[in-house]
Image (cartoon, rainbow, N blue to C red; front, top):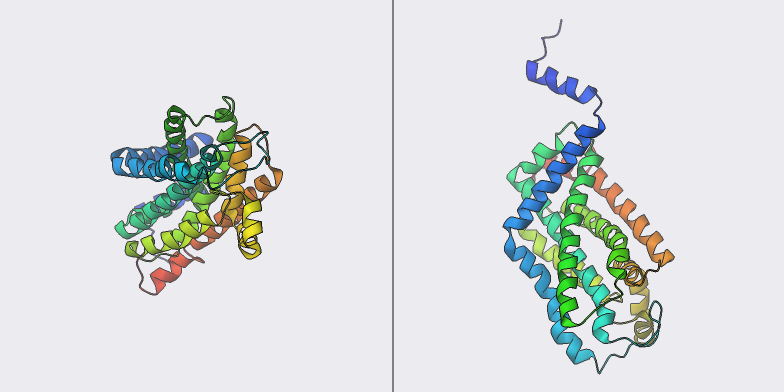
Length: 290
């Protein structure tokens, strides 16, 4: 006869076997979102840095490039627009991109500190925990985007009034894709010190090989190879989705690719964080940081 199971183990097994209700899932989601929000509020330099980067492009570079980079009448614009108006959707994408990477940085930090182990042994489904983490990161990043748009509005860069509402779904979908990408990257990073290099390797090529700063037709004229790289860059479609949404339009190709990439990155992250199959398990088996 086998030895009796300890009381704590019996409780854990009973808790896992008992199905959770909607209220318990919402409580878990609320806890993860509040934790991410409080962490963001306590890191004021993170908020300031998230605004400094796009504001430098808007205030300084846009003023210098305005006379150099002309923007023809291309959808969704119905007339000529100033360069700073053109790059505003790309700068919103920049904020989402950096925020998604910052969210993955917190995953690496939590794993080194042991907090990630506590989260992942939770009886809630692994996919739900990771999606909740993504939702928390997207909520914070959207707040940063609207703070940037508010500063840009006072600077004179104004979009259609209704566009500030219609752009919200595009910001959410783009943020989910970039957070899922960051989460996948966090599963591959063994140490916190390596994260800065990975960020630079991902963020800057993704940002500059996109229509965030210049139209795709100009890229195609200058370099067909670079145009193909931009066409293969998921961030390109996030920027275009945001750009069209500002004017109450849907760019269906961008919408389909952003949704597909979100599902792909999320599925890969769920597998990577699976203790029986993913990268996290292999790192633990080989003695890496868990």
